[in-house]
Image (cartoon, rainbow, N blue to C red):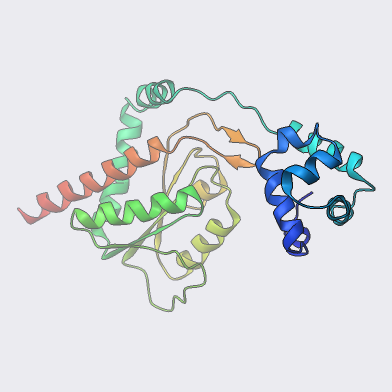
Length: 244
C-alpha cells in the first residue's frame, strides 16, 4: 500500500499524516476521520487526499486496507539458539566432516591469495571470514563489488563462497567468473546438494533447519562462524608445520 512512489508524492501535511499513521497503526484502524484529523493536526480534506493517493475511495476503505496490512504480520515459531547449536555440534562429530574441513584448509594453505564472496548475511560473514583468516597470517580479501574487474590469472587463488541456500544467482554468477580466471572454489552452504555446492571444487555443508520470516531467510549463521574460524585455525597450523 505504501509504495516508494506513493510516499514520494506526499506533500508536507500528507507526510505528517503518514508518519502519525505509521506510529499508531493499531489505533488508527478504529478512529473516526475527525479523531484522526485532531490527533495528527491536519484537516479532514488532507486525509481524503491522502486516501485517494493510496487508491482508496474514502477513509473507510483506507482503514480496511490498513487493517489487512496489520493482519499480514507474519508469526513464526523459531527454535532456541541452544537447540540449534546442540543439533549442529552433534552432527559434526564425525570423521567425514573433519576430513572436509581439513581438505578445505589444505587447499587454502597452498593459495597465494584467498577471496571471500557472499550476499546478505552471508556477505557480512564473508567479510568477517576474510578478516579472521588475515588475522592468522593468510592474506585474504572480501569481494564486495560484484562488478569488480578481474583480468588476472587466479590459478594460485582460492575463493570461499558463502550461501545458506546454495542457490544465490548472484553468488553463482560470481563463482563462474572467478572459476573462468582459474580460481579454485570452496563453498560453505547448508546443503551439499545445492547448485553452488555442486559447482565448487570443495564444499563444507552444515545442515541446520532453514527458517524464514516473511521473505527473509533467518537461518542461524552460528555454524558458518564456527566453520570459518576452524578453517582459519587449521590453515594456520598447516602453514606452521610446513615451516618446520
